[in-house]
Length: 81
Length: 295
Image (cartoon, rainbow over all chains, first blue to last red; front, side, top):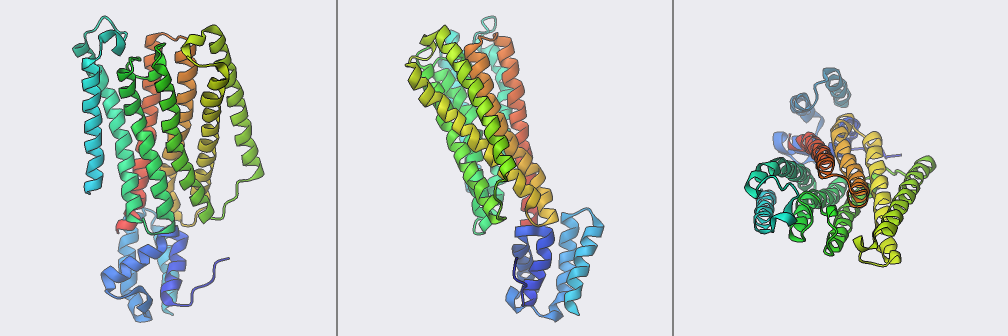
């Protein structure tokens, strides 16, 4: 049973793992570093809105199934609350 | 990029060596299509070169994906599998070059009764064995990442298939040996211990690796990640299973059943096309998975 992450970054990776498996950690790190220009562990709730825009763009390139992308983004959205 | 280009240089080098060997070998050693001159036979080789190239391309894509994630736990296993895929992609060209050099028939080394066929026979065990070994190491590593333990049912099915194949193979070798021991140039016990046993062991490795890879595709986390693995697992499984069928079919049909040249070449060509298709699936799956890492 994997441990639940406590950091925001870890929680985002946990959610992403359902979709990208072992690539989740690398994917989220890349989005944060390349687009938000910060270290993944320094991710704050205020960064999530921008991050979701980039993740939305990336996932639309990767998956044709829009409902799957929506489902994923909804789960990430909950992290903002 | 340079390393990847080197693979295509290697392909070019192997093609050049093959053509040199083909053109310089005595024609009766090269091919039995005596109606055609060597130059007339050259266009017949083109499909084979394309098939070899697809194998290299499949490796190139998989290695490119593996290099991209080389520091991660799955990346290490992918790179092991890619090394095995390279060895298996090199197998047809090296086998063909060796065939021409040792005076066997053009497309596969199992068609000559020449003494040098022993070299061919052992090459065709040792070389794919290396490939199977790397792939099975990587496949096993992937299965450990998802804590997969082979089920009792799966182990029994694989063991049963290997037993049946092994008995059929041993029986066929025994029949061929009794009919013409000069084909082997070795005592029977040596044929059994150095030809039959390694083949059967290799088939077991290949089938277990195929099982692990398909289970990894089925059970690894990530809907999108698993989607990329559909093609990759089909490709790797296809390469392994076709290698097994190729080894079995060639050994039995060509060497021992004395099949006609036309049926031999047709069978060879069909299998090689399927083999290339499997490498094509590897390339497609690796490209899909790499796209996740590029974006």
